Length: 211
Length: 211
DNA sequence: TGTACATCAGTGAACGCGCGTTCACTGATGTAC
DNA sequence: TGTACATCAGTGAACGCGCGTTCACTGATGTAC
Image (cartoon, rainbow over all chains, first blue to last red):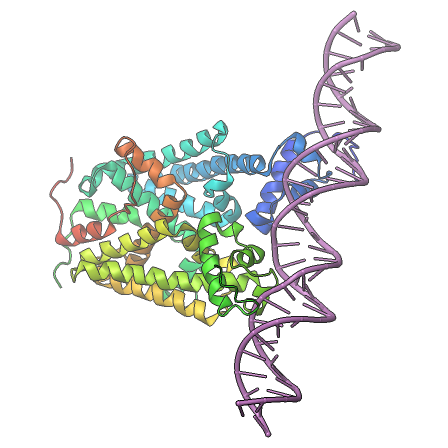
């Protein structure tokens, strides 16, 4: 008993977005076309034009959702981590990397700048909000490690190391590296513990030195 | 006076590779097709089949060259840096990031695992040689920062931070971040100075603490 | 040095594919009165 | 409550495009004798 809503769909825009998110993970960015999305939403291939004039417009809408969920994921992890800055930063890193591992297609899309319409205000806002959030989490560490060349350098280091991990993980390079450490064990994402390094840096070292 | 070598090309395979490398930078990975490469090499679209059975085979050949050049670039920078481990590591990072910035299409291809044929021995060898080289450069630092959880963790941190920078730089995110630091100045790639952080870590800190 | 012949490398026409886009259309919805 | 009509959302056929792949072919090269 399929409910045939004949003709008008009700909320095709939302249906296209949902189908797009699913396709993105099933077949990757290259597998996502307007015609396939239409098919997946059970609608003729010309229908999406009423809601998304171009493929880029649809991709942009998907990326907006991606940034929102990405921010939520990090916020959720941070919330669970309490108030210790080091723990919060570690949690955010976990959130970052877990999101990438759990939504590889969407994550890749979000960082494929050329595919998205950066004139779109919603996208700019969503992306900026996410990065501002990252900065806020890293901010306590910037005071801690001021010798590195200013707060911006610390944020850069934090972002680069976690993002690099995420990207290399998605491309299978980290699994390959980590597998050597423990003989072929299953590999959950485990980003470098930059929070610990910065904290060690601050607490003073010298536990071992010279030899 | 075009030399018309009518029919046999001489070294079409090499010509296809050269044309492929050029196209990769002009139009990106998605702009590279067998037909376009053939056209750029001045040859009919069916000709490449004699040298590369599939597009994947061509992309793999290009990636092999990419890894070789990538390794050379880092070796060259290191050579110029002398023997100080910290300077060498910084130089390698510069080489890594400059290569990415100078060959964005090729760099992206090298890290697009799904597009390449990893059954290909040449590719595996080229990639592994490059990463082994990275490890050798980072190796002195792993003794320095042993508290981080073993040499593998240090290598991971180094690799992730420099690779993350490269990727975020190619997607324009780092320029956006760095521009805030100095008002809109031109932005050459400047990866996080992880070598300095690790070295500071080792030399002992405490220059400022607590407040 | 010459000739026959196999092999190789490139040609050009043809195929089927999925794509984005356009267009006249039609059925459903909502609004004015 | 009813009717006319504008607007909106989805249809389905058609277009041209570039793609990878196949195929019978042809011209050049190299080798055996």
